[in-house]
Image (cartoon, rainbow, N blue to C red; front, side, top):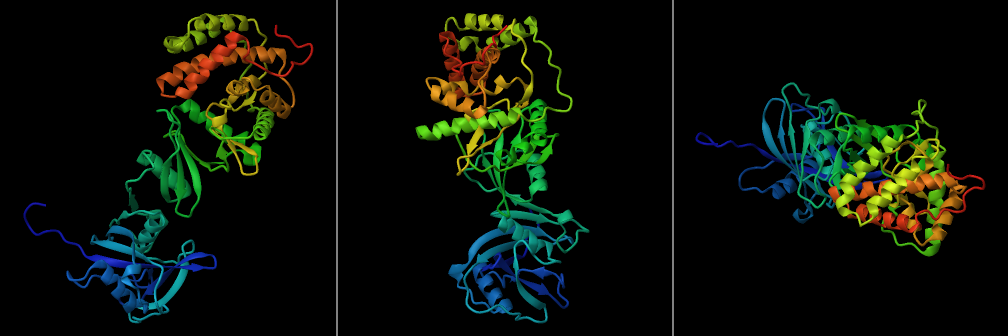
Length: 477
């Protein structure tokens, strides 16, 4: 400020004395009494600095012994959180909260004119009424924040009311990467409560926006912001309809925000198969389990009004392949484009396959392996009714030179593909490869690009679909 008297506010200190209770950590609270502000409300032991000669740690030690009888060594005071607070009447102050876990003595009411009770409470069972300012400091402390704002408005209650929660956490620098927009953060905290940590869990491409979030109570969820309304609608529909039928093999939808294309889902047990190092026996077991999981997905009930199974016209196929080739052409090998067009030309005459529920992006990086070896599946933004071959397209790369893994998958699936299905799979794999090359190049996903190139090379060599022997008497038309 320029000119005039310098703005000054009081500084107070708060004791967050924590001990281990039978049901978890407990915090010491006292109840205000008499003619003091907020009489009848619970609060942390606290007080003001005595003057410019007293530092905040000295003040904490002094106030603690004066109010509770506990003797605290200054070396045992740990900075918890600093809160810039404004009361409903408009008076502001700075509150410095300290965590203390070691002391001498037993807490008791020392100032009976202003305090009538002192007790230990679990953090999940705090008493009512509690001074809103004190509750804000405790919530910020539990959230792991370094600093918080708690500016109340005129007319706000003195006591904590979750409907009038003015706490705002000030983000601290850290290694966890960027956070989503404030509107998304507000949506998530409205769904699961205060978030203590946002960790970027996105794939290494510019269209992926996924975060692993940790709540103040220790819970964990995943937050995803979709790149368009189509993906948001698909994933939301899948999580509400067929994914619950997988039991523990998929996440549970907690909340959805169609305005910001965001969802919150439960965390799923397991480590990603992507990049995992497995023994030969483990690989065969994993791919057999993948077959079982794919069969469970394909057996899920279709939507009550599934889309009509309309034949794909020659013109539609050509439009689709022209679009994919347009993006991928600069990155194709000589002869790739001619091969792709020949595959599409042959596919025009194929009989259409029936539709089933599909994951739509059934690949290793969307599969988790739990400690007991069972598999989990995530990421359903491409889920829609499609032929069963749709979910094999992105697994074919793992079968290259590994007929044992192919056999293990189909053993788990319960049957080999028919000749007609294999013909459709060959077509879908080629189209997906071209699409992946164009998309991966444009969005910085080199893995997708290389997989597409390998797929095209195997298709041209005639080694793309090492499926077990098709069912007798079933040939493509």
